[in-house]
Amino acid sequence: MVTIDAAFRRWAVRDPDAVALRAPGTRMTYGELDRAATRIARGLLRLGVRPGELVGVAATPSPGFVVSALAVLRAGCAYLPMDLTYPQERLTHMRRDSGIRVLVSSGDGGDLPPALADCVILDPAADTDDDSDGPFAPGATELSAPTDLAYAMYTSGSTGLPKAVLVEQRNVTAFALRQDFAALGPGRTMLQSSSFSFDASVLEIWGVLLRGACLAFPPDGLLTSAELGEVLAREEVTDLWLSSGLFHRIADDVPEALAPLRTVITGGDVVSPARVRQVLETNPGLTVAHIYGPTETTVAICRRLLTHPDQVESPLPLGTPIPGASLHVMDERGRPLPAGATGELWIAGETVSRGYHDRAELTAERYVTDAETGRRAYRSGDLGRKRPDGTVEFVGRADSQVKIRGFRIEPGEIEATLGEAPEVRSCLVTARVAPPGDKRVVAYVVPRDTGPLRAADVHRFLAGRLPRHMLPSEYVALDALPLDANGKEDRRRLPEPAWGRGSLAVLDVVPVPAAPAALPERI
Image 1 (cartoon, rainbow, N blue to C red):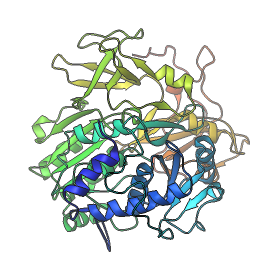
Image 2: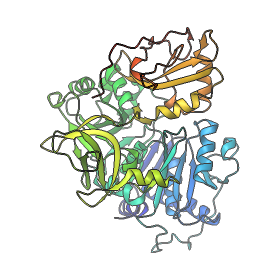
Image 3: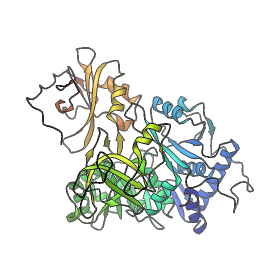
Image 4: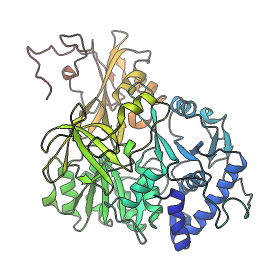
């Protein structure tokens, strides 16, 4: 397997004039991207970066982030996306936990948050020094290997702090070059739609640039459903990733907006079969690729391709593994289960990442050896079963982890932060399905005082400490948390929210529903 940079350079040499990145007012060819990354990589080496060092990249979604990430890899380092929209506390944790000392910023450093102010800042626009005889001259030896780290990406953590997944270069190239649910290549264009701190960006960036396609950036700001169709048509976009939540919104509002596409890719949470049917009925000739895969296994390892409404099952199966990956259903002792039996999904193959940064015990627990194949595998924590033909069906989570709008969320992390709010005595956080059919985060709060609770005050507290995708959509005030006969928190007795009140309501404290005479056992 090759490095990310080597796979990219093949296209930069083969077709340097092909457009690699496109944004309003910007057009960058493969050759121009190659030269820009070299210039920044030399700047990093002048700063004394060490082989394998983790380097932060702080930028808004733009071609500048892509150039900087490629430059970090070319310098023999790995990149850490630093989303500047994240709260200070989260950026501070990422900065301290990762130990980054060098940051590539597309700004002048003055706009960087205080959490990153003590980093050594490289501003690509200011660094214009060139050294044509440097380490990146034609024929020079690469500074990295396929087994070296490519990037670190933080995911939600059950202890209240996010943890970083370490992904190697060979994991990325194995995924990008072998995935077969999007026919990316010359003549294809993907629209950038996800946060760079979310692993769908790996599909959008490296899935495109390692196969000779073009990545187009939308205008600044969030696109409305109506605007999306116009942008797709104007930019001649052929492929698009949408989280399940966004996919549902487009399917409900303007499914015809997806008409210019050849493939729309969705996943990250349970996808509504009815909405898939709606999209396919509205857009004959479109392929909906339903994909599955944890961050720890590099974007996606399973896919189901749907081209006609009659193919849509309810619920949608995860499908079958991409080439080079394998998925096994295992019992609690790590033994393979027969078709039809429900167990934990173990994922093996070249896309399985290195592990967690500075979390040796957790890495040893989740990254294991697959006895059936002898390969390294990741225990997903997801429950599933296999059909006789090898198609995998999703059953649920083995723990309380949920996915909302494509982001994996640990309710425990939100609870740990919510419990620190001055108005909160105790709390529980869970996911509920709202009447429109979308999954939302709901916070159940026991106030410190007996009077009404202003949800806006609690929401404001969380907004300063958690990313936007982790903020609850609804709040419910309780007089106490429900407990079962064993004194444990009983989430089955949490009342249904008054949907639509959101984070602005003044909440009256409601009593906990009485326990039924007999509670049904979990299936």
